[in-house]
Image (tube, rainbow, N blue to C red):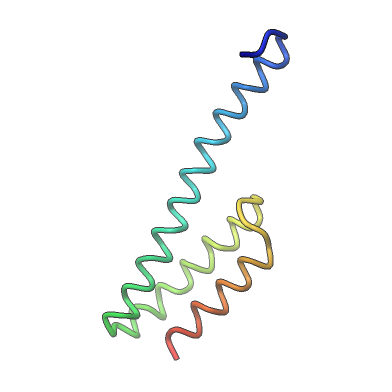
Length: 84
């Protein structure tokens, strides 16, 4: 455990940030999972409208450094290919 006051504060910040990051990552995974489920079920029109929400979530995750920019671009490309 930290002894110095600044180390204690850093630990508190790390715990808070970790909770937030885990929550955001889980939300991202669930959005992608729901999109893939729509595609597999053959609901193409619903999937097309849902794709914009997936893009938004990926872009925000990349902006917050939750995932890297190129990973977001790669996922967007792969997910859009699923409809075709």
